[in-house]
Length: 337
Ligand code: ATP
Image (cartoon, rainbow, N blue to C red; front, side, top):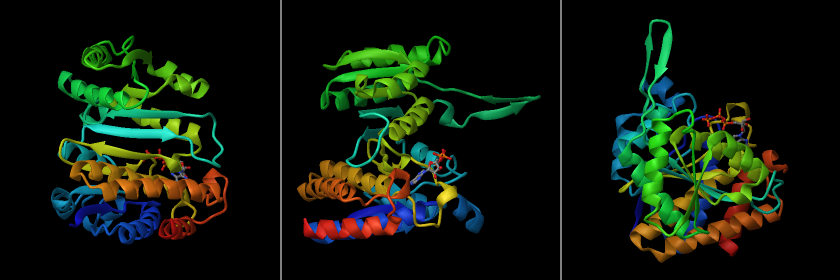
């Protein structure tokens, strides 16, 4: 049985890290006899220039047909491509696990999962101009808060059982006030410990004592910012994968952006993209109850750990390897594991 995977390479470093991850996927496919039906689709800045739209209808249709999707980063059209896909398919949860990997210099030891509400907040895109003002509407609903809190509760149950709700209800009294109140109500139904922290304090605490966090439940924009910070604490933006989850659909992607400053130089770190594919296989394996996918995901993680131990590192994490060299080495490791 084959699995249909829609893949958007994206902009900037997106094509390089996608091709590198694809090379790794080919090794897993033959080792576990997985038969992925991967179809590449356009979206993003280059797509806008070439075709007049950042999200063509065939990409949306391909996404509908696929069992699961993965994408590289897109540049300035993120709102029209990434955020639009999240909204169209109601991918309401953005899950961003951050942990240390061997042989990567880090700021601190860290092991957290950021559970970011992904469908509303300032990212709803309700912005307008009035006289000489620009106005953005921040939407936080009871419904969206409850469902993301439930997911945070489930994830925390499988980990150490601590959820920290991060918000700013002393200033954003209505929106963050609702988020905090409803999240606590929902989490009280789970066997988890719950505490709360204002986002400014949380950003400082993440650097000072990341061990005080396990699952961080937060709103869309705070989650976006805190997850970049957390990834950097672990060593680099280039190693952070993420999942956008809905009830039926899922889209996986690195947390970093298109990094135009290093695009085309074959020095981008491909690990976030590779680890995003690992998360994809875990999700699909669970959904389809396919043990091969779960094993392939675990093999991929081991191969990543071994490659890093053996110094297969790009410059952002203190190495001198090229993007594609990392991919070829992991490909070889998987074949020999
Ligand atoms: P976005 O808002 O879309 O997340 P951004 O403009 O905040 O994007 P990035 O594109 O993520 O930022 O890049 C921020 C910095 O991190 C850049 O200097 C970039 O070179 C570096 N960086 C990001 N991703 C990687 C990667 N995979 N490998 C190496 N360096 C990276």
